[in-house]
Length: 257
Length: 109
Image (cartoon, rainbow over all chains, first blue to last red; front, side, top):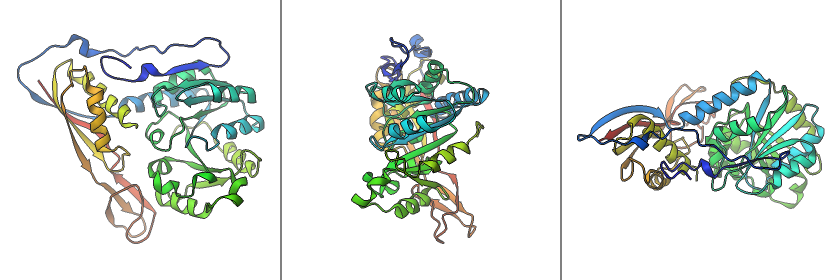
């Protein structure tokens, strides 16, 4: 953590899985408070500045960088254990276009290793204490990853149904993955996430016979927050209805929103 | 706990515009639909300002209602939360405000 302004970005660690060394995060932003000076009287300074302006600016830069290279980037968000990585393993095996992945987790290289074993390049972003990815982390990860022109980049966010909803990363679409074992009440409990999503993937449908989960309730509640949002029920493990996900991915083009 | 990241963004936005002068009050406008909890933000603000010219400053948060327009019945109404439901039962609703997260002004010394 930066001792002067308290920004936590120094805790972020980036690991590209076809290298055997880590890249330490640089700290390029200036610290104007280093040359502090005092004045006698107080006065009001009108600012009217968006708190997340810097993140949004970096997200716009990521979006332009991706568009120049005709790359489709998707931001995958869910609770821990909903099956994002399993869905990606399947997708890498079955998608015709080249795929690479930015993996966000607080610690470990587990998920990036799974992605690499599935046959795609991956960069692991370890956020340390951070509970979400932000546009700066994704910008640095894209520089490391150097995805192919016309490819698909999946950004697997830190498992968390709260914080990632607020941070634009420069992606084309936000996809929320929810599994049937989590309960069908999640949209009402975590409204901001479901309001921000462009698509809901309902995973682990092979377990529906064993749990109390009403897919119709999930869809109805999600549409109270996000009218018209599409829900794709599937099982990444068994492959059931995975064709609907592939079809949805095929409809995407690298466009700027 | 994204409020820590938000608090850090507040601090850096202010630092960029105050040239190292001491700041005694930071004023925010926070929409009810922004997904940020004022109490959590207050708590994190203290942590994020430590060791900066904002240390010890007061955070004043002006919480604003969400406002929406119903495309079915045409009425404008207040949104208390993220559920886009008009009194007429329609969910075909356009959010007009309530997602803001702005530093409006600061008191500098």
